[in-house]
Image 1 (cartoon, rainbow, N blue to C red):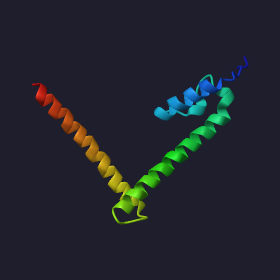
Image 2: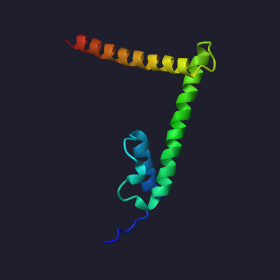
Image 3: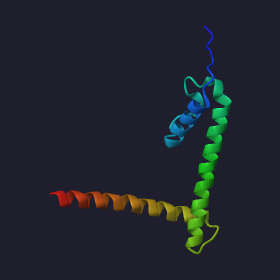
Length: 103
């Protein structure tokens, strides 16, 4: 039996793309019911991943420049990750502190 390809509305495509961007844990182009939009969704996924990579690279290079070592991506990446680790630790400390105040 031949599968019928259904063309989705622009709103349905935008909703799918937004959902994927919020949690890109699957290959968006393989989403059931969106087979008619395969090429568009592949292009969208590739472009989104490239944009995220470019954003990450710029963030790391900017952080390296702030530290006085412009152009050193690896060092900038290290600094960004350390800041992320510290942010996570501060959140844990704040949650523990909230818990202590309740008791």
